[in-house]
Length: 248
Image 1 (tube, rainbow, N blue to C red):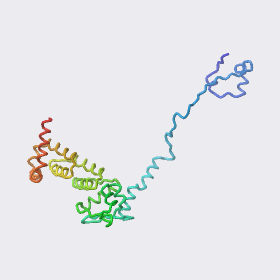
Image 2 (cartoon, rainbow, N blue to C red):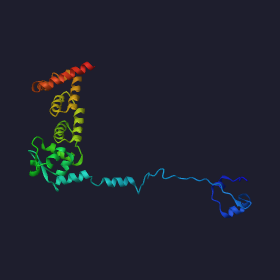
Image 3 (spheres, rainbow, N blue to C red):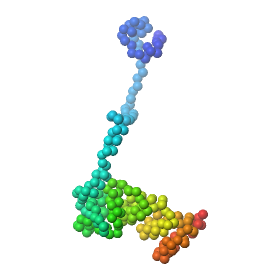
Image 4 (cartoon, one colour):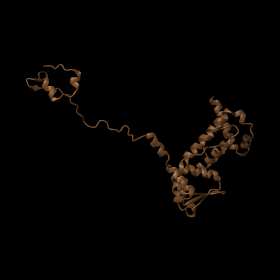
């Protein structure tokens, strides 16, 4: 016997009183027949917390932003000389520093402080070939991964410092700035710097730039100086320009 039940009756919970009132429909021959659907699970198919929020998340994020970062805390310790165990000495200024932080960021510093070198025993590092502002910017990046706004001169100086101490991430950012700001007035100095530091990628970029603006830089005072002082580099660059022309 099939039951003609309304949708609401099929879906809603049935009380005992309701069943007894319609016992002729539900209890045929005093037998209650139930039609059931079963779903069996073989295990956990998927388990993940989609999102959990407590209160206003935007306000929480603003509150967290009020606390200093690890880099800011380390930078504060460096500026205040807290637990510093070495100094970076330029001709104009000495900067307190932590050997463990310098070693973590620079393989050159790590080797310096791990081996029996003069810098380890003297508790200072003499840096006579870099200006004080460059060392200050270098320390800011080493401690907090922060790079102050660059100009042409600071980018060149930081590139030299990053190459000297093998801080590749800083060197990459300086190279990017120099490449994006190449001009006829500065390309010769960048070419010379790239050659001196054996940076083949940057040297190739400058030579490609010169190939496009050949007529403008070949008669410049900077190029004439380059031919006079570094003839090998000038010859190599002219050869690169000629090869670029053949490819076109």
